[in-house]
Length: 442
Image (cartoon, rainbow, N blue to C red):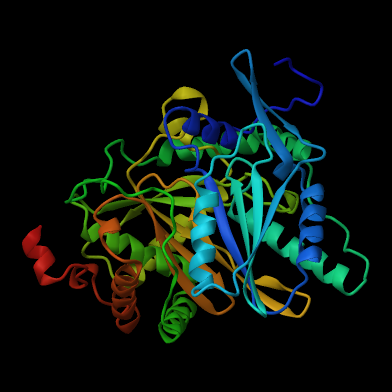
């Protein structure tokens, strides 16, 4: 294939995904999929019209990829033939289950690099309930972008239904996204961030979990059904945050670190993979494309530390890494590895989603349920906030954590949070993560 005038370079993050898939991973591991649950009657024809309108606005979603002389390029597809399937499941004995089965088949079907790398399906599960399924390759979208796209579809649909003008589009172009990343890599901010990470990378030795690393026969991408955390406990966590002057995400991350430390043979250092949006300014927040990254969150959970001290430590560390979140840390961790491909770390990821409250489709309220989060190297804990509610989902095949149901992991985390909020002055050594049988087994 010849290089044409519309050829654009890939960002470093996109290159990492490209080479990850090209060097042995499944063609579908990197597909990010979610249901938009619409609890009310909508017009399927107008839903399709809104989808096509939004896809036309969002250039990063319409990217296709190709190689020329060993180099990878992308270009926007001006008139993509986007798949929008429709299913009426009202006569099914279990319409929601059937919708998930059909969606699973879709998310396990590869999409060609040439594009389009997004597909849709609208399931009618009850007379006044629909499930809009969206499946997109992570190379063209991330979690932040999924919320942007979903809310934009809802806004456009609502305008069409009410015969009102569609609100002005706000998405940044594909060229602007690439230019924004290139400008950062040529800036002094890039070198300041590089200096920080050069001094703050974890030790090369990975975590030494006390059980086998990978569960055979389990995929690395399917998301478990979300489990809601006890609202009263979340309220207690918020109260502790007010007293300590830290954010809720810091206390949740602290509890996750204690859970991981309980299963890890080693010293006091705990390293988590910490996904970040990298959207540090208003312009970056207009891109629905692939912008996010992963940084290591290096924590010290000394047995003599108090809960208060540890939560403050975690909050400080999170604030530090967020100040330097745009830097492509994998470039240093891989030590010059293959052209940006991210290497598996064997670490547990803790992904704290921002609020994903979805706008209504006209008068019908809507919410989101993720069915995949893209490739998970080892194991991931995903915390999803919808208004005042907090949910936990999981993904990944890494043991020992994949041996537990999400409800069991939620129970363990809530047990930790109960102990932490009940007595913030207690030492970490007094908080036991494992039960008697697990201590005996280990």
